[in-house]
Length: 461
Image (cartoon, rainbow, N blue to C red; front, side, top):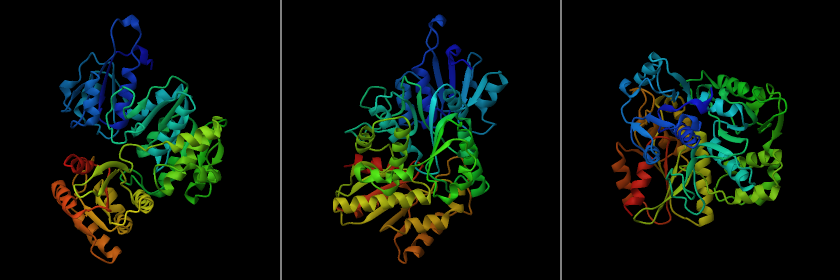
């Protein structure tokens, strides 16, 4: 496909972080001047968000109802998120009209084909690792193109969540002009198999997306297929001591780089983002720097200045009683444990002697059901847990999966009553406003819309 010849593009699910990044990329890459007009970008999503609002500021027409009449015959290309079903009315209409239709992963593959692609895969840590690599390459003046599944926070302004183009703004897309393409490689529905990586990173492998994968072995097979796509003159960066990676390593033709072998540099890192998991993410970034002959001190200094990404232990402000409020995207037990470990480390360094409080929104009925015991064990490690309603996302209501059961298990694992169920966000906000105090650390956690709680708490103060 020659994107230069495409004048009108429609995105189904344009509010997604990845989808919006491609929309912005195509806005910055207009078609040949011979057409005498600029490229037209349109799209749809279920609801307004900071992402859609910023795209609208850039001139993108967005519909908030996904209906067939939004699709017209003069559209050249429809790009759609894999989260939508095949009976989506816009997608059906596009196919009836014979319009070229591509998924988001297929578009990433198209972009990747002509680039030196650095693809960051793994069940946990993809976003932060992608952002760290981007930071290193930018500091080394390698001018990469970057697509990340969050927002890269600008230095000195960690609360900025705007998606605008001007410098000093947070962004999910960097329009570099070199051949380097740094991209987050999602394993859901084997999306990452569309990419053509020269450097592939696998941060780790864990049981997740069990609404799609049969079991852990099926997940390992997908990662093996990803690793096999790296050419013989390419590189696979991973932890070679991780037993879950053994079948993956055996499938690759590429040179294997053990990011754990760079542990000697960890004492020099002094990261601003807390947690042992972020040290590992930084080691992955250092391995990429080593492959690309980036001067070691340049890479280390870049990582020292890394302030994190949107919704990854992101500082939001304080409650009226001066408890610190952070927002975090963790939605898997392993991620929750890592965030809690980082939060405890942060509290110790800041001499915060109060409670660690988690307001947690489970994400997906299937994930909550499959990993409920693991969720309970992870959440039992804090002082107080406020469980919100399950965020269903792409799933239908499942009456067998109950938040009260998770609360019961958390309290059983903790050996005391630390968890409660809250039926709405307003109740969570009121409790946090009234009960948290100076010295406490509040982490609003989940992959759904519970970040509204963190924003509301700070806005009120």
